[in-house]
Structures are given as structure tokens and as C-alpha cells.
Image (cartoon, rainbow, N blue to C red; front, side, top):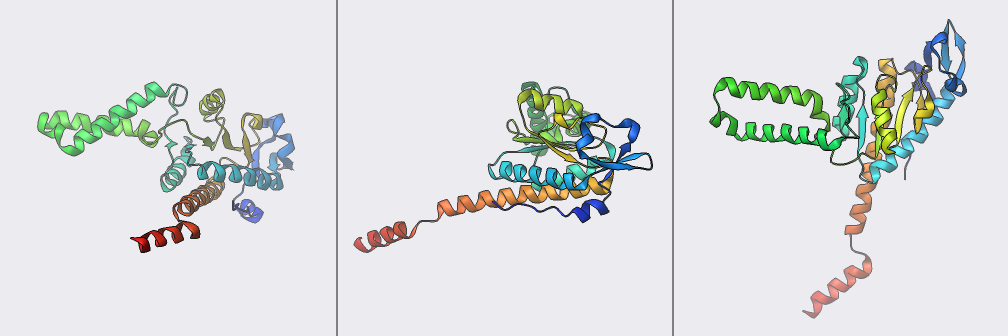
Length: 256
């Protein structure tokens, strides 16, 4: 299966090496820290390359198996970037607020999603407009918009995801807890202020810089697309008859 190579120069240009102030560090990030400069920790980008390439291999494999990857990025500077990447790869996402039980209590969350989809279908078919007055229809529309803010990104989450990709594991600690509880692999960016042992595939990098977040997401998107393409080739190959099968078909046609 093809792998995605990481360019360390791109990471450097994106500012992926800038960590937090030295007094805000987490001791378990020590193996990923290169040095101190101007009161902040500098991340060792050679470790970032290793961590990112390992994560990308796993993401490609997960995608090739037809499993979903749930993107999580609710911090302000990550929301639009995460939503765009998830939508372009056809993956579920959470960018507004992590609701308790999003993974561990999917029965309840799934019920709300089903209600949202039902309202959308009834609105699209004209059923609500035919049955209710304009004010009531407007209220239904507002309810749909509010629910889409919370659940819109997980409407296509049809079962437990194959992995969860998180931008900031401190900001979205509840997503980390629920994924760990269910044994779902976690791929995440880990800055110098976090505990990387909470992540299955840690990617040591600046999780605040927009350029860094975008670069990591670009790599993740390529890995997902590579996995999907690999899966498609396998399907196409299985649907193509072998030479012997083709020969048999031709002989059967001749006999008829």
C-alpha cells in the first residue's frame, strides 16, 4: 500500500516546531522536545516526521478498509479547516461542541440525528409547509438549523468510527476520554503542554498555528484519499474476470 512521505521543510515553514512556554510543558512530552528558545519549547521535527508518517500509514489502512475517521476540532482556529477537510473526504466531524455521549451513548445521540433527518426530509418534501402555518414552519426551520450546528457533522456516522482524529486533546479532552473508553484508536496533534500517552498515534506539533493545522490536515486528507483509491482498485480487480474465466465465457457463447 502506498505511503505518504512527510517533508520536514514544510513543517518548519508552517511553524510546527513552536511549542508552549516552558512553564506550561508536560513532562511526558520530553522525548519530543528539541530545545528551549526565548522561553518556549522547540519541538523536534524529526520526531514529528516519524509520528506523522506512522499516523498516516494507519489512516491510509483504516480508510482502505472502508472505516470512517471522525474529525474533532472545536477550537476556533481549527473549526473551518477541520470541517472543510472532513467534508472533502466524506468523513464525519465535530467542530462546534463535543456533546457528552457522542461516542459512548450513540443510542441517544443517534436518536437526535434521526429526528433531524426526519425534519429535513419533511421540510424538503413540503409536508411541513402544507400542514403548518408560516410561523410554525419558520420555527421548524430554526430547529433544523440549531440541530445541524450540533449534529450536522455526524449525520453520516453510521457506526463506531475506525479512528478519531483530534486537533487539540486538551480542548477536546471529552472526545479523548470517550474514544479511550471504547478502545477507538486516537490520532492527534500533541503540543508541549499535553500528555502524549493518551494518544495512540501522537503527532508532536504546534496545535495553535493555523498553518500547521492546515498542513497536518492536508497530509491526513491525502492519506484518506490514498486509502480509498487502494480499496477501489481491490474492488475493481475483484470484479474483473480472469483470463481463464473470460475464456470459459467465450467458449460457452460459441457452444450456444
